[in-house]
Length: 236
Image (cartoon, rainbow, N blue to C red; front, side, top):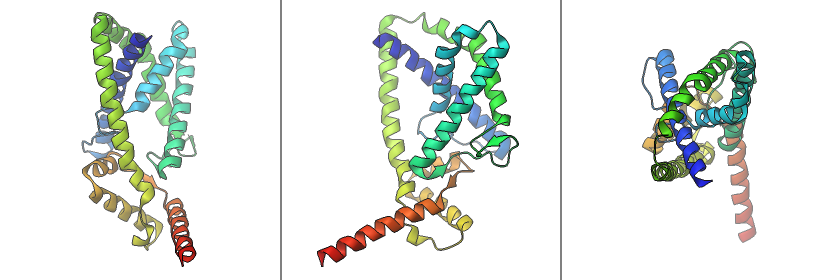
């Protein structure tokens, strides 16, 4: 059982790394600069690893029907991307990608322009990439899989803890520092966050279009301020 967990975690990291490479190429194509993509420190984007594993586990019985595989894989990618965008926005008051300017988008979280490539990529994985990678991993010894899997888990979990600690600063910004229109505030907040730590600077640069939810941040700040004022009054 633990062997299987390590085995698939290695695949998760590999596909997360491949997704990281894909994102770097995409950003370079659009912005003509190389940036370390992803909200984690390491060279991987977990959403790709999760997506591929879901497709492998749920769709391995549909490889004999290309059309069905494409439709189902695209659907899984859409749901995963939408949920990831929604959850991260609720957690950190920031939207890491926004397709509002794209045709056939749903709430700016997903769009047809990205869904089709994801579906095609899933087919490439199922028919070529995954058989190739599993063929290599199957040559590893039992102990090698365990050692590699555990090592990667420790590195990844440490990365997640540190990265989420850094990102949480977005929710703790003192909004009294910024007294301008929304667009200008967004710009100033990004500049402010870049100065807080090298990791935050990397995060902001990784997502050039990150949209920080100013109104929600203001509400949080106002609530905190009210609580402080109330405590002071009660103390008096």
